[in-house]
Length: 433
Image (cartoon, helix red, strand yellow):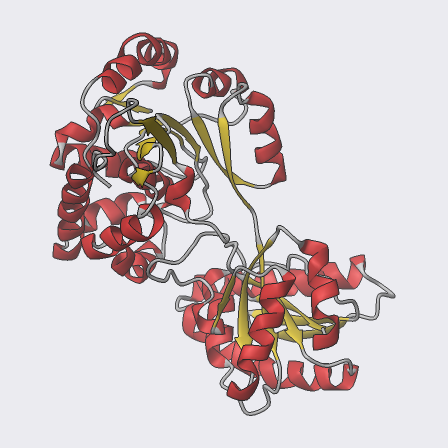
């Protein structure tokens, strides 16, 4: 299906919709009044109130995957009006103002094409919201697994605030339709790409010259443990099981601040029962437990076959597993509660992590309080962009950056306006951010 101008249309009309966008819709909207930030905030505030009241429960149950309600509860504070106003002030404040030559103003890029991710429910709608907050028209290519959630959210949002209709479009397209995606890209001033190297490389080829490519590529995250013997490890285990290794912020490797294999083995034996406890708590139905047990069994078997002679040590558990490897590389773990453990003495931390520069995201740090600042500084110098407690690795924090950058700044441009010669400098026209 296609969402255009507040209505659902058949995907058979894609060519007609694109033609209308190019000839009528985009020029008409961009020629008219700008999208006021207050309009967007009021609409989002109304949507959040319906969420809190339970009005959207049926929509969530129909379109969202299992666990989406819990994820919504975790991100709910970040989509409140107060939180969004703080973001706008932090990320865009100070960009406009008087200058020696006249003034600078903040304006939207114009039209954003979002190649939306499918690894978390709600992200396609969220990326469009960021585009709305910056005054852009948003064309969203939906991921394969969306199942109608984004279309339903856009419908609800434009029902609550009809003035948003010309600023929101969604296309349920397969990535195989590169010709259609190229046609959409030709309409865009910026392309917001979420995904792996293949998706980003494909969009670089499709993006027309002069179109700004805004990449939110896949990232790698890990836990770093030093002096963990008396530390609480359950929050880390719960994070590993809850996220299933599916997010950029999911712990892929547990790094231990030691060079001794015997110490790492002792950690695995200590941590496995904790991971089993988290798995038992998370997989509540017999079907979920059976699926998790199958994943764990397959993981151990695959590694036994594929890595014979590697020296890996497997620690199979109930619905989960640990694998102790001898190398120090940061890599992807198997999914669903099956995680890698490796040694990484702190003196090796920077050279090892630098191999993944540009790909690092979150480090969940467990260490004595007296060592936290030293280790946090090492991790930051290695290229890590978020340093959290392990249980909070996938939590969103108020006013945090995204992969080391403020997203809203990437969706706007600064326009410099010179004062006519001989005139005194006047206060700038205030942008509605």
